[in-house]
Amino acid sequence: MNRKIEIPMPEYDVVIIGTGAAGLNAADTLFDLGITNIAIVTEGRFMGTSRNTGSDKQTYYKISTCGAEKDSIYDMAKTLFSGGSMNGDHALIEAAYSGRSFYKLVNLGLPFPQNEYGEYVGYMTDHDKRKRATSCGPLTSKLMVEALEKSVYSKGIPVISGERVVKIVTENKAVCGVVTVNKDNISDSNPFGATYFIAKKVILATGGPSAIYDKTVYPESQTCSHGVAFECGCEGINLTESQYGIASTQFRWNLSGTYQQVIPTYISVDKDGNSREFLNDIFDSKSEMFNAIFMKGYQWPFDPAKVNCGTKSSKVDLAVFNEIRKGNKVYLDYTKNPTGFDFDLLPSEAKTYLSNSNALFGTPISRLKVMNTKAINLYKSHGIDLEKDLLEIAVCAQHNNGGINVDINYMSTTIKDLYIVGECAGIFGIHRPGGTALNSTQVGSLRAAQNISKNINDDKCQLNDYNEVGKVLDLLSAHSNGEMSLGDILTKRAEYGKMMSENGAFLRSPDGVMKAISYFENELNIFDNEYRVKDLANLAEIMINRDIVITSFVYLNSILKYIENDGLSRGSYLISNELFPSNIEIDKKHFNKTQIVSFKKNKVTSKFVNVRKIPNGEQWFETVYNKM
Image (cartoon, rainbow, N blue to C red):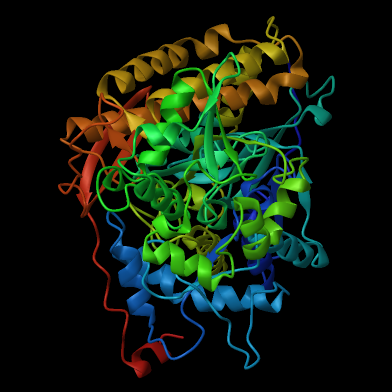
């Protein structure tokens, strides 16, 4: 690049990337701890998962706060740890900070249900035997974001919008800041709209690998940013472990809980308009089918262990996928009961649940009106009337339990002063109780803020020259002066998503995974030489595609290396060349191991490491007291 370019270089103690529940809480907590020279950098305030997703009653998971049920921090940690492939120290921290984090949200005004004696009541969620779950309704995380945002704005913390992070700048394996592009900042002297945010510490709070899939419940507005972390040298952990489940596609939303417990009718419509109730083809009896639908409310994520065993609820996911693969569209119909429906055919658990909910009557929509009117109103607010409209669905990516590898302070294990919080932090393993993701947004950001406040004056960015920033500008230049339009970029993005959803989602055949790796490896090798935008206003969009390619390549290699290490089906994915295998062997070899991967020079390396056990957190009071 021969042209002289001048870009802004604002300096902060801490830069937080992302305006979801994790990023906002990080900023809010830092300010309360006296760290005020901070800024939040975001692509857009309204773009993230926290603000735009939910379910029938979106769950927040925390330590028990009601009744005589016995609970403890260690008990909660054991529950988290028992999900497999999770480090025990993270489990203990997520439990230890849950009460403090929950009550902060209460103090910010979140309306969690409280009985007349002041107890915050709870319910049982999946992968848990305690009533630790609570909810403010379908929009719990949105309410969290709004409350935290109000607190952030009241403190005058700057929120800088329109900034797409394209590089995490490091020197000697320590963070020095981030480079962003913003089309609104394009000028003659700054043709790429770039800014170098210099920072002693950086907090990455950008959510999950949202844009790598075609079939996804992540909001369309949220874009992937794992690639910049992998490229700067961060390790990935448990990238194989995601959750997939049935969700609506026109309006992206999880269809768990009461959406399934009212037992809607599953319909497939072919290209000629012929419709049929296709679940009849895969269940041995009406009773088994009705119970499987009902149990999807509790057992929403696809689970290979629930295909041929137990309630067989995950057969529903496979059947939906099969119909879509044949070119059909699949819908839920709440206006009528499945053919042959009879309450007397329901197993006792389902019948008792509906009876206790005063919903042992009528059609699915009439039952939903009684059990959860908010769930109906939510769709109405997005132009879908469940009282008359069919609801198009698919099996969609929803959450990554793994992510970027972090230590007990949620700092990258390989890049000093780079903290990772929220879903992009690789905290969880194979299974996790529903609602733990929201707890983790608050716990991780609190923990990171505490560690930063203790060490903010220890280090100063030692970037001696600006060669690294110059390399970023060279990269941006390499993607300019071309012919790609925004339409071309989005077409490629859709192609990437289709490749991932078909080969790297909940159904994983070894042949399909290798085919996808070959595809993304080729894209990776040609990307910086062949993909150039015609309009510099689309530079951020092409860099999003680049991030997707890197992220997809790393994730697929993680999957392949797991399979090559004799990894079998587990969690929320089926490793098989068949869609309905008669025998599914569930992996046991890797239950007490984490998978760590690294990306360097377009190659991915992998190792399996024994999980760290839950530490003995109890210590003598005077010992801890004297460390204060």
